[in-house]
Length: 126
Image (tube, rainbow, N blue to C red):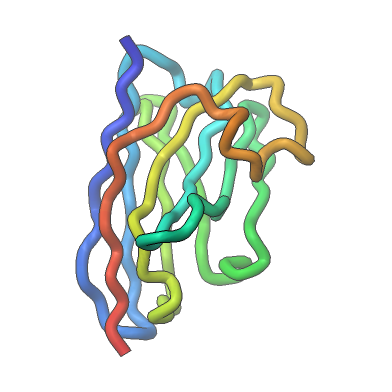
């Protein structure tokens, strides 16, 4: 059984930083495409960033230069380092796992991800 558990969310002031973690069980993060999406009430779940099995990454334009995805294969965990946070980054952040064969043009499409965590809330105050 695959399980993804996010942690690390919280309340932070604008300009601050947070690091989210996604601990996986039942599936290798190194052997998967791993991604972060975010969602605010009443809106769709939007792509933030992904890391492919081969290590390549893809970022949404809104977070480029501020967010960094990484993974620790030994801990089977994916991280999202978020710097220079803005109020518009406030959302519920979800970790997702998909096939290692996802192509770059598919990374931002949530339907291509097979497993999802429960989410961790990030709130950025102005």
